[in-house]
Amino acid sequence: MEGADLAVARILPDPLVRTVAATRMADLVGRTAAVPLTAGALLVDGQLGPVGWPPVGQAVIAVPVEAGHAPSALAKGSRVSVVVLPAGGQAGTAGAPVRADAMVYEIDADAGQPGTSHVTLMLPDADATRIAAASGEAVLILRAAG
Image (cartoon, rainbow, N blue to C red; front, side, top):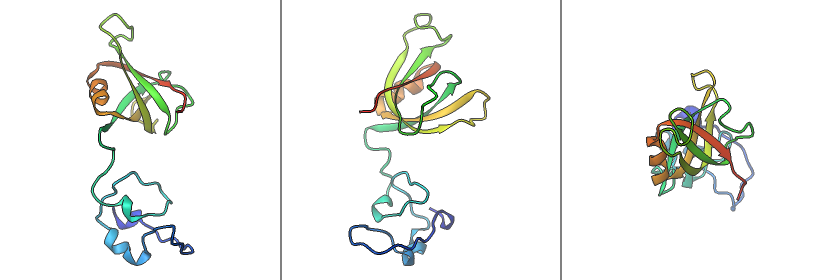
C-alpha cells in the first residue's frame, strides 16, 4: 500500500465500527491488503496483513472474451458458467467443451484487442486449471443469483 492509496475521512467514532486511526497512516504504507479493497471505503485492520485472497481452494484467472460471447448484463459479482469451446468454436470438432462455474471479479473492456474483453473470474482451483489449460474460445453464460 502506498501513501497515495490512503486518505483521511472524518467520522463520528462508534465502538461498533473498527476503523484505522489517521494517526496510524504512516504505519500502513508498505503493508499488503489481504482482501480486495474498494476506493472510498473505510479501512479496518483485518483487511491488512498477509494475502488472504483469493480464499483457500479458489483461484483467480483472466480469460479473453470476444464480442458476442458474453451477455450484455455481465457485471462484477455476476455468477457465470464459463465454457471454452474447442478451437474452431464448434463442439465435437476438436474435442469436448470445458465448462466450470465462476464469479466475475472484474471486467476490462479495454483489453488492448479490439472486440475482446478480459474477464477476471474466481473459481475453484481445479476448475481454474482446466479452464486455463483449455484451448479455444471462452463463452460466458450468466446464471441466476443464489
